[in-house]
Length: 160
Figure 1 (cartoon, one colour):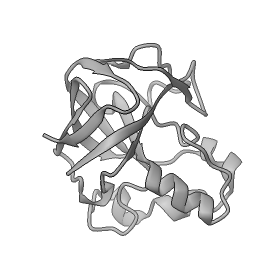
Figure 2 (tube, one colour):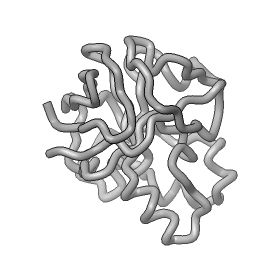
Figure 3 (cartoon, one colour):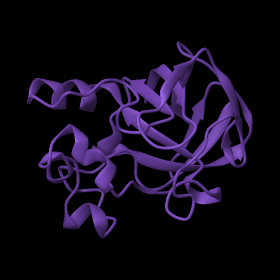
């Protein structure tokens, strides 16, 4: 399984994450990225949030006013089927090695894009860690950093 990184994004905290030309993925996450609620987002097991561009485009087609970075992702990817990425799966993203740790539980900050969005991307099965849920990966997947490295748009992302 192989795809490409469409966008690398960071913020000073909160949504949206804004595009950058690239960055260094280190153990705490992408350099320069901050979290409004670090007790919920970030930390060693939630260092990087990945969202597929295919999900963003699907949700836009359903009428949600989304764009890359709107869901708070650090890496927007294309060509990787997140529904096939279970917890423990490792991905090479540019020069970094990441390991999927959990599906992201969407927070109230996403309500700005529509009250029903959270139900479209997350359900009880995802919350329970069931990667067979049809919504698995739609809310994004958190990853921990196994090996730090540089990342930029157009880099390959692939199962390691």
